Image (cartoon, rainbow, N blue to C red; front, side, top):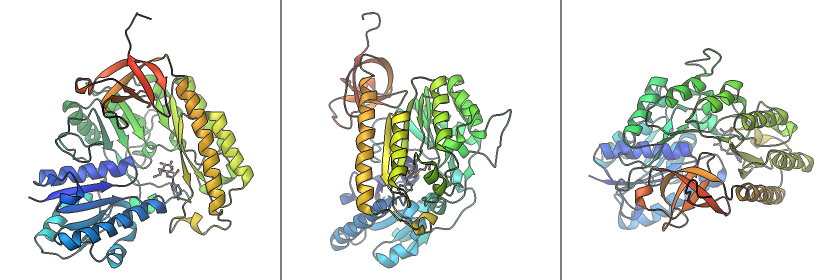
Amino acid sequence: MPSVFIKTYGCQMNERDSEAVAAQLVAKGYSLASSERVADVILLNTCSVRDMAEQKALNKMQNLVAETRRTRPNVVLGFLGCMAQSRGQELIDKLPDVDLVIGTQKFHRTGDHLDDLLARRRDKVVDIAEEQGSEATIKEHLSYGGRRNNGDHRSPLQATAFVSIMQGCNQYCTFCIVPYTRGAERSRTIPDIVAECRELVSRGVKEITLLGQIVTSYGKREIGVRDGKSAFVQLLEAVNEIEGLERIRFTSPHPKGYGDDLVDAYGRLAKLCESAHLPVQSGSNRILKLMHRGYTRERFVGIVEKLRRVKPEMGITTDIIVGFPGETEPDFEETLSLVREVKFDNAFVFKYSPRRDTPAATMPEQVPLEVIEERHTRLLDLVNEIGKDKYRRQMGQRVQILVEGPSRKNPERFEGRTRSNKIVVFEGSERHRGQLLDLKITRAGSFTLYGDPAILGLD
Ligand code: SAM
């Protein structure tokens, strides 16, 4: 049987989609290649959120075409995911050596399309149609986990797993391409999601991250509010009941979705980790309105205050865009002041990137690139300074981590995450994998903590 290599760009949703495609192909008998150099099928699962991500995947494919077509002309080359969805046939027109283009609602058809291409029943396949029920098709997992193992099915079982709970987005933020690449919001049922989580726990998974483009909109249409609880909170309650599961996380939510029911859930549900990724995008109310975000700076700060009241140790991270069209220096200073006020544990700072078909791309007053660069540097400096201080404050604290595996920075050591989602590196070994371990923090680096197993009662 052929071997496949999948390279993933972008967010956790894309990682999860790639893992499900890999599992589907392994179930058909494919092996997972350790590198693209030895693979019979090479798939790039793409991201469209910023132009840079699209350019990276296009350049990569150009290089793959140059390398493979000379020496291994039968290798199948394909694009999957968001850019495949938004560009479709255009990708083959631009790169005629590409064989396969599969959109975001058709991942589950990858195996069938590859069969046709490998058996030469078809010369090219472009499948980007919408498909009813496609939200329930991302459920296959590799038997040995998929997260951070580059699809290597021989690597040991992962302690953490992603579970896709919904697809699509109805928010239509004016900068964002996601509603056009992922379609309208569609949610899986609670029993279907719980069954998948149970299956993962039976294989040794201890922590599950529930995934969706806007998870807090989960089940709005299909399930609705019951006893004052949103469908998303009802789902959290059901997952919290799973025996053997230790931790629940989710990403990404929308600040608008943080009603009192969700804030209360952090106090009630023991497995729900004290961590929230709250994409704020800007600190200026004028820009938030132009972005069509649906909340004000004051409402955002109110949510953070409520969360910290329920769980003072809550880790809070965010996404911020600099240089949105019309962003003036005073608007940007509002963002700086919000960052100082909230004191995020970390923030992803993005340079605004115009996306086709989005309203912001044609707004007047596009901000010059050099101004965007300068604001990006200033904001990153502030985020790093605050982050450093927050991490330093963890010194001497006792924390519990779930050990995930060898450290990505130094594979001689092991690493895990605190409940507030901070990476802790320690002197560990394979026997620690999947364990909940108490550590004392001895050192704080740049967005990484270092710890020693805490000896209770000795200090
Ligand atoms: N659920 C998130 C939300 O609340 O909007 C969206 C997730 S999006 C895939 C990840 C981040 O990419 C966004 O939060 C935003 O900061 C950034 N982003 C989206 N579109 C962008 C654009 N056109 N230019 C720069 N950054 C962008």
